Image (cartoon, rainbow, N blue to C red; front, top):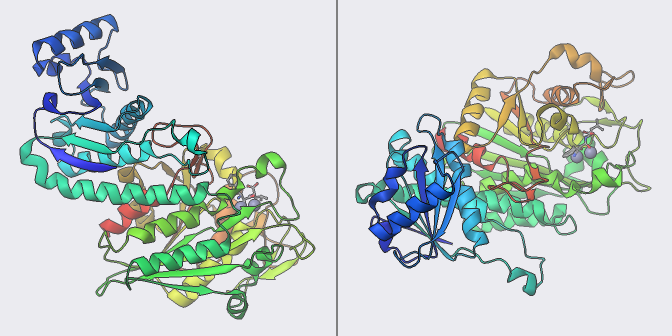
Length: 498
Ligand code: BES
Ligand code: ZN
Ligand code: ZN
């Protein structure tokens, strides 16, 4: 898909679909086409009672009155109520419809007011991201015959006033990079776990480093080295699988930097639950359990190109959670790298065990200014916040509010949750320092976050439980079913700001 910025009269654009936007009850704005097309639009608007309501669509054949073959008019709602989140999903909706109409060449006319309410950069970047994200499909495993049913959009023209082209150019570039990174994370999650093994993630990280000629460094710690590092909690989870664990260490270090940030992604390449086996219904989507790792890898793929000024380290304790004769058993006790002992009562609460060691490693070896982990950690977080909102826990106010702002700008939905220290009693073990499940049924996402907090010492840290939004069970205009690439946009927003 290629983007072009063009200042010319939209009626001259030779495209399959021309997309126009329209404010609620301001239909006159559409009347500067030739009189034949204006009559056609006016008639259709009356007939279909089109008012410009948010997401209201009018789809017409242009009958050759202008260069475009088809016309989509989409309501933006009111000028007061529009925000970047809404703009994103409105653009996504129109692109999805164009794709359904098998358009290969699409043009979008960006309303002048959008570029006044937001900056030119914001409006253009959001539009480009929405176009790419809504056009995404994972159909590499479909037969050629099935693939043919989907027409890819090859060309996207953004029609904007001539004076705004130069500031829009950089926005197109940024939007493309951020959206393509999000698609990379989606691909990694959508691939079956037979493909995305720990070894696959390790070689994926290695190839990222190769492609970025030296600006990204990677080190893969093999099982023996992980043992030497004392990461017994992580190794406990990996024990049941024939796939060897790989501890992936990525580093992006610009020549001068003020801050060092560690990003940790949960990298369970498949979560069967281990001996505390999941039901088949709950296991169905568990290839998603490396969505945090996928987001971290995707972020690294664009760090050098986005000229991020912080030193960023990425850590992924990749392994599978499998039952077998060698598997971890309920009742076993493991010792994490920071010395704390953990009684494992449920082998399905494995993410916190791998993260305990990754967090301990980050604190003791990397000594960063900030740590952010992304993890598909608990079903309880989905009970609390639903499938579209990630939970945020943090021991640091400044870091939490930076993440909340970055998520807002990146168009991702997160909600701050309490690190309620009173609940720490619920994860105290009778015979070890901690247990990996809690006493009682309630507040499971909070006790999981409290468990992680035992491994971060005093380092400013934020934990994002992305169990809900990392995987779409039902299609939305911006995200088809499957991996969503959640977290990539908020992390890139955060890193490009600081
Ligand atoms: N990977 C799951 C969490 C999950 C569930 C992610 C649904 C995405 C969708 C995690 O390892 C897990 O199994 N957690 C258990 C913890 C429990 C045993 C304390 C859970 O949430 O049920
Ligand atoms: Zn689990
Ligand atoms: Zn898991």
